[in-house]
Length: 252
Image (tube, helix red, strand yellow):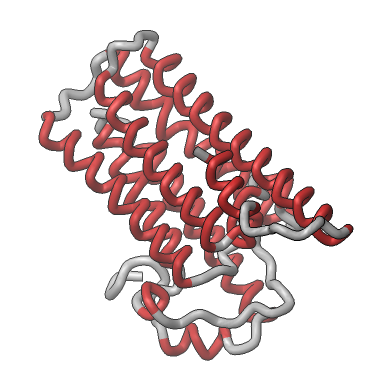
């Protein structure tokens, strides 16, 4: 699927390629490799975390969740490849080592562990049988996971500067329309909806414990991010005055 998308980007070039074209092809090729590798690695990590912790493959809640998670991820990635490859390039460079600030490196490390906890704890719960979550709650969790991905997708459509690391691009400007008119950090809000739905979709009440840790970690990240953007992005302080809530309208 990703290779087909890469081909569609390149197929409109008909003239003999110049050096600039070769450079462009090289960047596209590298992005394709990073994207495919990241997608496959994500699927492997999710599978190992869920089924390894559960100790069995007959974990239907995990299979359904994987379809929702990986299917949504694939659709968003293909959209970005076709419509905003620059944003896709910003998103594939992620993780603790990609951050420039020490505080964000620590926060990202904690977030990575907490995210794994959101998968491993439900897997262990399924193995031991701690929770008895009704099927309709599991379905609700999958719906919430899908809604979370939808919110993230709407953010990507609105803001092409949503890098996976905290930084300010040379031509970056404050986005205040769409979901950014409701809360300052709609992508984080969507991620929290997704992660809350994860515990339910995987049939685990105990999975809400790492979700709480993830929520606190995201709160720490966005507060640090706001301080950085206030200092380095023109107009961001005024935007914070206009949009009062960070994650949840009328709450915080």
